Image 1 (tube, rainbow, N blue to C red):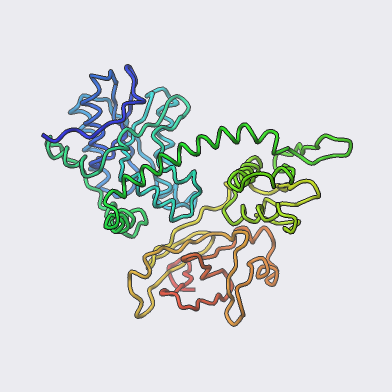
Image 2 (tube, helix red, strand yellow):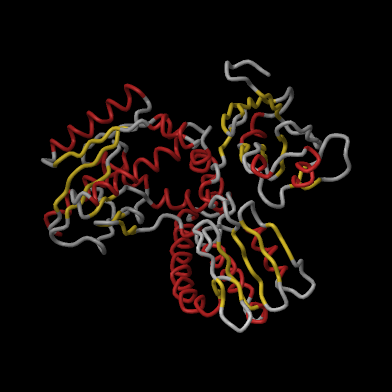
Length: 457
C-alpha cells in the first residue's frame, strides 16, 4: 500500500493545537489527512482552517462546503472566514494573488493572536519550494530571497509551520487515491496567464529534462541559503553597532541625531568600509539603508559600492527618499524629511500579454502585433513607478536617456515623478506616460491607453 507522505515532526509537540489550512486542493487535503493519522501518536489537537477569498463564485462556495464536510467527517473543529479579495486588491493596487496571500496570512496571524491555535500548518510542498526559488530568481532576488519558503515563521501567539516541504505533489495525490480520499481541483492552477503557473507547467518540466532532480536541487539550495542568511544575520548583529553610526559627526566629537521621525542619517567610516570583503561590504551598506527604513536594489547597492572608492562619485540620489554623500572620512546615507518610506511606494503590477493592467492612474491594453508568435509575449510586462538609474530611448533621439533628464525637460515636479507610470518589459522601459518611447528593436505587442469606460484614449 502507498505510504503517507513524510511529515516534518521537528516542530510538533504533544498538546499543540494545530489549525490546518485547507483550501480543498490535494496538497492541503493530504496534509490534513496525514496529520490526522499522526496526531494520536504525537498528541496533537487538530482543527481545520478554511478561508473563502470571495473569488471564483460557486466553485469557491463548493470548496467551503467540501472542507466543512471533511472536517465533520474527521470530527474536527472548523474555522471558516470570508474576505473580499478583489476589493483588497483594488484598494492596495495589488494583483489578486498578492492580495489573497496577504489576507490569508493576516487571518492565520489572527487565529494565533486570539489563542485559537498554537500553530497554523500550511501545505507547501517540495514542488512549491522549487517554484518559489525559481520565481524569486527570475525577479532578481538577493540570496535571502533564494531561501524560499521557510519551514517555520514565528508570529505573535504561535508559529506558522510547513510540515510538507519534503513531500512531492505527485506522491501526495497518489496516497490520497490509495486511501480513497477525493479533493477539489482549482481551475486557476492550470491557467498559464499566471507567472507561477508557467513556472510550474512549463519551466520546471523543461529544466527536469536537464536534471530530473531539479526540484530537490532547488530545495537544497533554499536550505543552504537560509542557513547562510542565518549566519549573516548573527555576524551583522555583531559588526553593525561599531560600523554604522547614527547621525552626523560634530566638532569636538560625538554625533548629532535628528529628532524628527521622518528623517535620519547614518555614517560609515570609509577606511573601514574599504577594508571589508565585497560580500560583507554589500551587506553592511544594505543594512545601513534598512536602518533608515529604506531598501536597496542591486543597482543602488553597486552605486554605493563605487562611492567607496577614491575616484567614486561624491554624491548620489539613490531614491526619492534616500541620498548618499561621501566626505573625506565617511560615506553617509541620508533620508530626507517629509519623504515616504520605501515600503509605501506602489507595488509593481504584472501585465499579461495580451491583456490589460490598471494602476497608477492609467489603464493599458497590450495586444500582440500582427505576425508575432504567441509565445514571444509570455513574459509579462511590469507597470511600475520610476526607479533610480532608469533609462529609456525617446523616439527620434540617440541613445537611452536617464528618466531624471526626461522629467527635467518636461518640468515634472519631484512629487509627481515618484508616481509616474512606466511599463517595463524584459528589462526595457517600453512605455512612459506622456512620452514617445522608441520601441525598436520592435516589441511583439502594441500598447494602448484605455479610458475608464473601456475605450481607447
